[in-house]
Image (cartoon, rainbow, N blue to C red; front, top):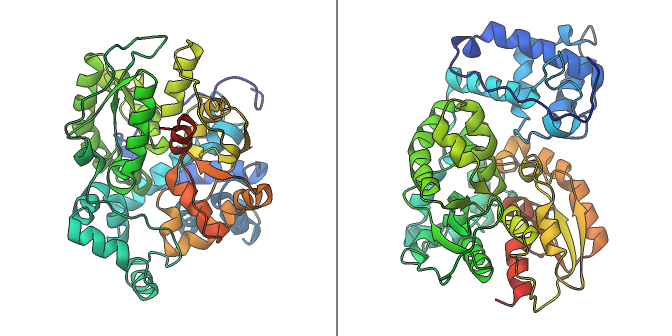
Length: 441
């Protein structure tokens, strides 16, 4: 068995229903085995803080090997992992089918699940991962206005840091009382004639995501306007819940399963009625494309949803390939620094956002394929915020040097995290917003 190669890595299902999955001794044995392989390789040193943390523990141990690291310190490595999946997809030469069978992200997920099963979650972590409940509360008009004002006050942010461990410098999004689902409750598509081409059926149900619904409903408006401008009929998925990526990052696999059991029947009915599904947040698409299918490999309804859910620009690129994409642009976009988010890169669909935006005349894109550092809830937490800024600094420095007309990321929170690091009062523009500007819509 040789290292590396051009073959596609094999991803084994997550055996989380097996009692052995939660056996602490068995887990520590596997952690030691994989950490020893990582220590001998060190190829992933630049990806995230898990690997520097591990290598520092090894180098500072009495043996300078993994066997000198206290097993109680393994969790320090685990806590630094935010499940970006890049080590598995882009770096590790020992992923299956290699005989060493290294799946670092899912081993970290197993360790997170064990920690959650033993310790539960803090109030802060419950809040950060409880997007449905928090969104419903902070979406109440008076509460939304109060929160959006209060979070800008230094005294309030310091209090949140002291009481909850939410870093005072971290970006916190506004909450909108008029959610996307409220705005488009009675939406009737303006497209009267649809055409199915290639893998696309020309009718799309939009999974708004918690963030798109409650925090930036403008993204949903942009998505609808762009798709209908391209002859794709749209409607919003209703009665759905969070995709559960925040719960996955926490290791609360039972909560992931509960939301899956709620969402999949709703989405599957749409798929059976010939609707495609599109979601504007890469992490949410990844949950349905990869993480849920690996947790529930025998669920045939989920498999059908998996085959029918798309990133917006993936969908548009498929239509472009079949000459069904509108290239009648009204404005150029100038120079764009485009950050490709980790959870989009690991979907293995290529750089479709770059492909589509590059069609706009007199527009140039500088591609940045590196982690921006936000990473779900990671950058919001006091104990990890400094590390998140360090991880994102190369991205921020590239943008500063480029002096673009716009900087953009498919992950809106990554975009805002970049803005936090730039410290120049600039704001990111989401790729959907940029495309809408180019169309003059």
